[in-house]
Image (cartoon, rainbow, N blue to C red; front, side):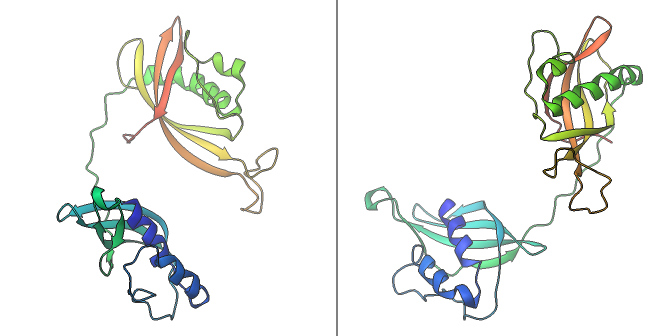
Length: 239
C-alpha cells in the first residue's frame, strides 16, 4: 500500500514545467517500455495532497488493486492502482501493472443520533471552576500550578505554553460516584508566534486562532473538591 501511495504522489502531480522531473520519478514505479508519462499528454496541471492508502483488493498472491485517498483543491477523491508483487523468491518487489483510475471518494457516513446521558448539574457546577483552573495550567505548563488540580498520586504532562486557555465551553457530567468519566469542550488560543496571542487583533493573520477541542477526563472527588486523574480525546461528544 505504501508503494501505491508513493506512486500516487508522483502520478497525481503534474504541470508542463515539471514534466521532465515527473517522467524520471515515474520510472521507479513502472514496467519497462511503459509510456514515459503514463497516459498524461503534457498539458494542463493537477495537484494532489493528503495522499493516504485507503483499501486493498487482492486478486491472488501477486496481484492486487490498491485504493489511495487524496485531496485535490476542495475535492476528496480516490486513485485505484493495480499492483504486481514479485513474491519472496524474486526480491519482494512491486510494480504498477496497469493504468490507474481516478474515482470520487465515498460520501461521509450518516451519523446516527445518540440519546444524551443523564447528567449531574450540581457536580458540573462544582467541577467547572476546577476544570477552568486545570485547563489554564494544562496549557501554560507550570508543573506546580497544574498539580494543584491533579488527583493525589497522579502526574500529567502539559502543553508547555503552546496554547493559551480561552474558555471552557461545555462540561458533561454523568451521574455517579466519587470517580467519573466526564466530557469537556475547551477553546484554546493557538499562538501566532508572538509572546502574547492577541485574539482581538485587526489583522486575522496576526491574531491567535481560537480552536475548539473535546476531551474525556477521569475526575475524582477527594474531600470537597474534584481533581483530574486522566485526560484523553473525547471521541464523540453528546450534545
